[in-house]
Length: 325
Image (cartoon, rainbow, N blue to C red):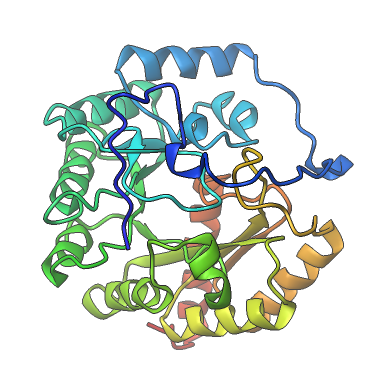
C-alpha cells in the first residue's frame, strides 16, 4: 500500500515514516566503494545549470555515489514531479511526504536545461506520485515531448514509477511518448519486496516491462537490481529469467548502500569478482547489455551504454538472429 505522509509540520524530518524504526548498524565500506568528493569545474558548471533552471536531480536526492564523476561531464539525471515521494521504500533516500501539485512549466525547464547542457543522451526519472489519477503519466509524456522539440538530437531514457493501481492507459501514454529507452527497476528479489519495497508489487512491475514490449517491440527496455540486501544468487538468477521472459534488453546490477541508520541495513558487500560472475551469467541468459559492478546505478554511463545497446541489437540483426520481444 502507498504511504502518504503529511509533512506540513515536520519539514525538518526527511523520512518521518522511518523515525520509529530502531537504528541499524552501518557497515564500513570496502575500498572498492570509496569515491572522491565532487568539486571539479565540470561538476560546478552542471550544478549551476541545474539550479538556474530550478530542477531536481536524483543524483542529489538519492545521494548517488557517482555524482562527482557524472556531473563533471554534464550528465545529470533529472527527477521530475517534485522532490517528495508518496512511498516509503526501505532503501531509498528520497524524501517521503505529501507532494506539491505538478508544475506545468517543468517540461519546458527540463528541455531547456538539456539543450543548454548539449546532452547527447538524457535520463529522466521521477518520484512516485500515487496521489495523481494517472501516476504522473501525462507529465512524463510532456517532458519527453518537450525534450524532442528543444533538443531533437538528444536520445531520451526514462526511469518510471510502476503506475500501480492506475489505468492501463497511463502506462500506454508514457510508452506512446516514444522514449529511446524505457527503464523500470525491479530493485530486489520477490521475497524481499514486503521488507524493501512495500508499496510496490513485483509481478506488477514485471508486467509493466512486458507491456512496453507488447505495445512497442522496438523500444529498448531496461531494469535494475540491488544486491547486498540478503538475496541469494539463485534468487538473482530467477529475476534475470523473469526479466528475459518480459523481453528486457538491458540489466543493471549494483551494490545497495544504506543512506541512514533508519534505512534497511546492508547484509553484505558483494566483491567485484562476484559482480563479474553475475555479468557473465546475465550475458549467457541473452541480455543485449549488462552493467554489473559495485557502483553501477541505473543512469551511470547511460549514454555510452545506450550506444553499446544499439550496436548489440544491430549485430544480432546483421547475423539474422531473432530479437526477443
